[in-house]
Amino acid sequence: MKFLKLPFLLTLSLFSALFLSACSLTPQKAALDISSYPSATIFLNDEELGTTPYKNTSLKPGSYRLKLVPSDPTIPTFEKNIPLNNKITTIVDYQFDADKDKTSGYILYFEKAGEKDQSGLVVTTKPDASTVAVDGQMQGFSPINIPNITEGDHQILVTFPGYESKEIYARGINAYRLVAEVQLKKDQLPPEPEEEEESDDDQELSDDDKPELPYVTILDTPTGWLRVRIEPSTSASEAAKVDPGKDYSLLDEKSGWYQIEYLEGEEGWISGRYAEKFE
Image (tube, rainbow, N blue to C red; front, side, top):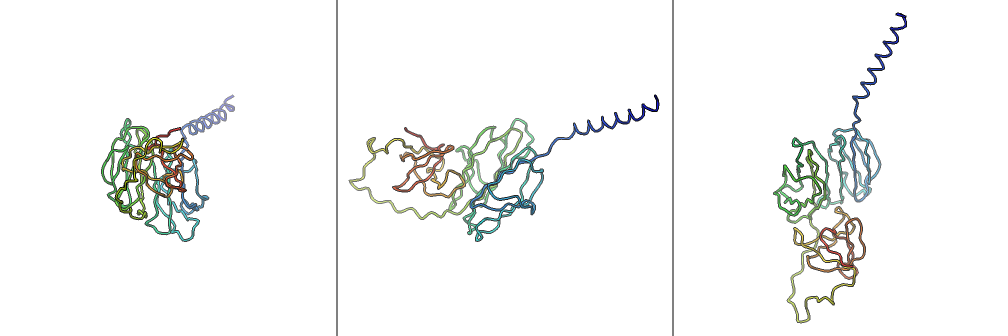
């Protein structure tokens, strides 16, 4: 019997060690979500992953060198060091152009914070000293560290004179610090034409002059105007700006965006956050 006990105890000890070791292991997985216009080939630490749009939820946490090679050969390669943190999604959203001054986009990720009941925000920008507003309230100039923005959804608006503003919607999470790295592009819109004197024929629109249903009315915005984009995305190119109080025919709607006819024969998308719909 003594001879039989030894291998039994040895097997039991080995099984217990393996069981306890397996129980102590926790999977380390990070997520990466990349979108770009035009599409680009993705390299992470020189390993080719595919083309944008791209999403992977099973990457090893760590610091990586991201390289995006746009499908348009006239556009320079984009390279950036990015963090991939456990159980957190890093978001990369860029619009590229052959002229680097016309490239814009942002990188979003979370970092662990010290306060369990607070959600922080850090914003860095190109160019530096850009104005940063959160939910319509001016916070200061970049780079900026805001200790507590409260948990939940927020609108982050980054502006700089002579550059197109960038509007980002993100969620604050307690015990984490949201980091936003934002790049603005130079404003390419032609200068506004000089206002002409109002003639006797110019009159305020009456209710009878409003567009046929359905239509939208532009609401007040932090900037005093609302950007019209060519696609329903904050990374899409700007087509025009419209003023609060104006009415426009509603052509379509998609995921919180309204498609309007802002000029005769000219269509674009606006954020539904700053428009009231009438049907």
